[in-house]
Length: 186
Image (cartoon, rainbow, N blue to C red; front, side, top):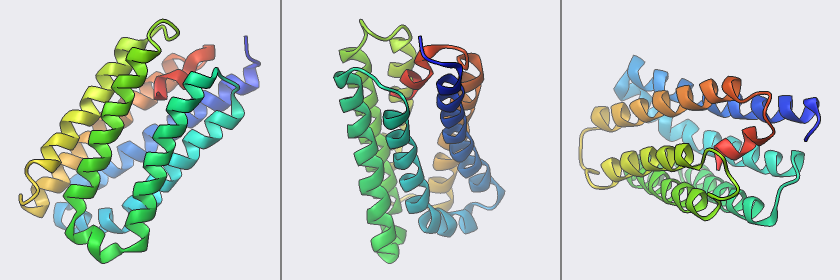
């Protein structure tokens, strides 16, 4: 069993990830058109932070190689799309639905595959599959309706952010005393 300090650190990181998602969701609903521009500007930073949080979790908590590999793959996806947004903001503005949609689609697929591959190790693998499915569905919505108006794209992203942020924050508190809090992010 891990020390209480490591449990606090890992559930805290899960909570921070939830706050990031939830904040993006709320901001998207406040002013959708303005949020589209802001999403483009800050999506790269958010993705880099999320990728960094995943890498921090890998370092904070020793885990089996298979778990570590899945989390590393997810962090690489976050970092790749974050860098893509920051290196070319104009392209990110024009192609926001494609970038965000691809990121959500791939992360959702990765989460579902990881949960299924590690189902014998993870006690809550069904929840992780469900979270992956949410990523996958919202990614598909963005990818297959890329010419929708900016406001509808922003609202799709807002719904996703609020749903995922709420899930992560609730689970951070629900599992804060458990050793496998980190596994909920798989």
